[in-house]
Image (cartoon, rainbow, N blue to C red; front, top):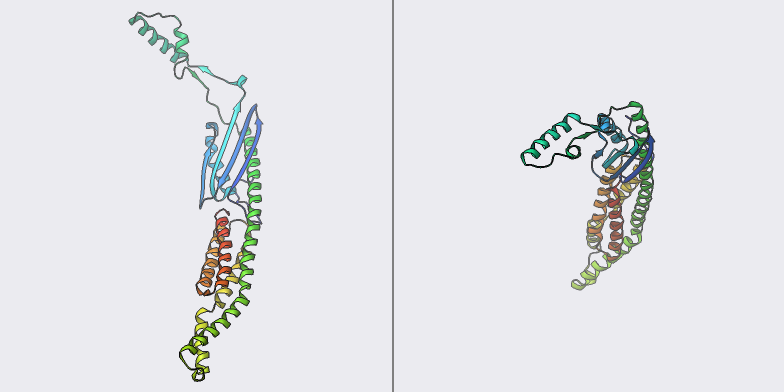
Length: 300
């Protein structure tokens, strides 16, 4: 298992993940569980048995290289065969307990029988001998950790494939709706010309209207509502989003930046629309973009 190298993938991954693996090592059943949620940084909460504490930094390094980003919970635990449970009597402490109990019993005129039964139940009367870390055991436990991480990666891959599919669908709809603006913009231009001319004819005799001046006014108004540049930039941002999709893992933040730029162009389209039919297309583009932004928050 590669402990130090970050894993690179061809497709995007979700920050949400789950993986679990179990295995038996020297009569102990070990269980490893990993789960993660979205987060701006790598945030690890690790719970491991005391015997493996000296391996904690090694584990954290491994998890950072595989999880990369997200709020991660890591649990390593084991179940011991009761028949092999080892406890030792803390003899000196038990003798001290008996002596103290005996003194108290005499002073208070109480019975002094069964003091051993009482003393053996006192704190730290029984102690578990300190275990030493066995490198062979750790090596096998590490293999279980690797299997849990593989399952974790697979979960994120499946989730990432679903997100990628949604991204492609959303960007495709935004691009198509932008193209669908063509006939609406042409129709809007005709309505603008007709409306301006009708307004002029209400206050000026038609025969006195200067056609050249009229065309200049129409062009001035059209320039204020022209959205050609916004549509061009929108198309470029959508193409960029598709290109980044091909780059794979580690692009979550970049998707967020591109989505912001797409939103800026869509908002400008809406502010310049001045047309109910165009606004309906803009609203649909905004709706698709909001779906994309929600998903971006969960991309590695």
